Image 1 (cartoon, one colour):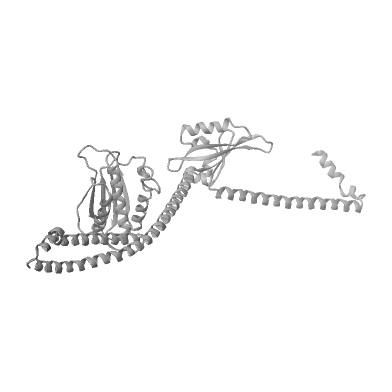
Image 2: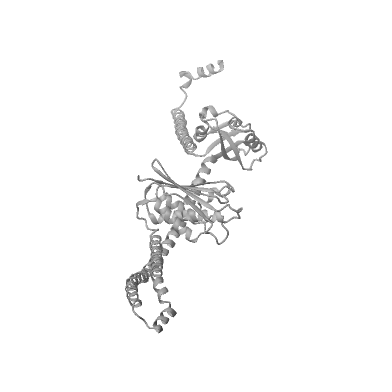
Length: 450
């Protein structure tokens, strides 16, 4: 301090008299240069600080908007940085997570072992994907697929790890939704194809039924006329037989069996009318079948639909197949009678195939029991057969398109799928329960109009 004081004493006015004006100007110029440099450095520093703050805000916004969880930890496994996704998942604040071991977030010993392997056995340039189970805010285990990457400083030295991952529940849910959409699209495609086939078949059947109507009408009309003629001929021949006939005429009558012929004529014509009427019933059934793909919704009485389906299936099923059915109280639903007939026939035919397709002890006949119940606002029809039943591994897939357990060439696997879709379109549902070697029970439920 004494030296500095002596220096200032040397700068007393008496000593400065010899300093020239140019020297003073040079000193002032230097001072201005230093001040300008200080101002420029301060402006540059403020710009750098603004850029740094902008970069920090940008990084913070990125971390906050990430849907994937993020953990940055040091070499000891202590959390240094994280994001909002992880905080929301574990139910803790970011400030509370800093300095917390990653191990404290893991839910089980297997996850701890995987984490330790990722921390201590990966090289500085190796990236690993590990599945860790984290404890969420509710205390439950949540699987997270983590990508573990080394984190290096500016000198290239490894200083920690960065983990980025997404809870597998979201991925599984997205995959499940994609699978459901794909299955729905496939089902819709198959139903559309089947509907087009049914529409084409319906037009063909309608044409055949129309062509059959004409000859049937001729047969019925002619037989009725023949019945009237038969009565007249019978009356006339009775009168002739009361006349005295020559032996030759009497012998001719016996040879031609005229009396037996006259007796047989009524039964023959009745049989012809019955056959023609049955043919008419078949044609009417074909007409109903041809309109089964149409979407007209009317009031339908289910007892009549079930009985019509039983009638058609019994025509082509095994004579030993017994169907137990009792006409119940009138149950009305809103629907398309042709489509509901298709469903009933399909369920009855499947029961016949299942019950008749196995060897049975003597006296044990294949059979199906159909019951109709009105429960509240629902009509339920149960189809219970005594077939081989449906194995547990097949039961979840029986309504899938083209899924069948029948031998090759015995089924297309579309019947139950189409029936399921038709029932859903009618606002109902079709379910099945079964046990191996105990038969199957299909339950059809529809909204009641009564």
